[in-house]
Image (cartoon, rainbow, N blue to C red; front, side, top):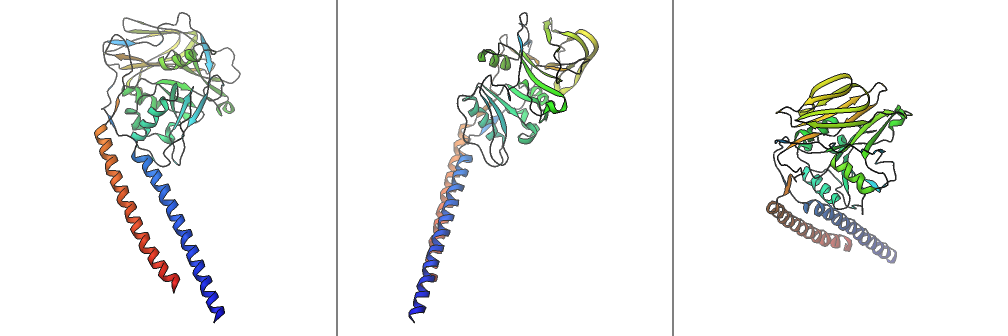
Length: 356
């Protein structure tokens, strides 16, 4: 009898310990779930206006002051000129290069992100960095989202992860003035190098950032080892006519406009001209050369006012944001109460089982 009693007491203790462990795991899982739910709940909801192409009687030429151009080659991923890191965590991250950052954003959304979460991340990263550059676009962004996302001034269009001209042209066609960035990492193995060329002193971070934001910069892709590269000599705008000139003979010169349509193409020229049509919302220029070098210029865009500025096109919907937060809070409270009620019933049942 004494032996049976000891076995019974031991079984009860194991039962109680097992229940405590299960309750601990359940509580921990609940806390983790609550944390992630709260993370998603308290992000704001945005109103995205219908995308509209650039329009107006004025035309902005980012290259208008190139009389004393100081072209220098830059790779945001590999050069140690200014602190840069790639932001994006979780199972399905959207990634951004954060250039000249003051602090890293520690929080990200671990699961799928909708356009509101992506816009919120961009806005938060802008407060911590001088420049936010969406990257690896096909992995974290839906193409149609480029019609609406804003508050970023550059996009990694060319990299070892791929070329994303369709994303760039869709953003431009939707009235988002976004400049091109090219970076390098694996591309040298294929024989080509990608760089961003800035009109700035590489010892002056403020000049570099201004060049990337304002657009007096361009992207270049060239054969590794080529030390005699062509450069942009000038891009003038006279009576709505674009005149572009390079330091070498241009094998093919293309003028590209709304929706990525090639508006005109010239072959074997030192310079070329294109008359800005009334229906043109923007024009960007691509140049190819005999040595396989490619140069991609930033867009010349229409605007409505004499002094060009980049408006914010996404607005927080405060009423809807708070309404959704209140609804989610009540849902969470109800869910927690439901779990606690079930746990109490389970505890009572387990006590009965352990006491048998």
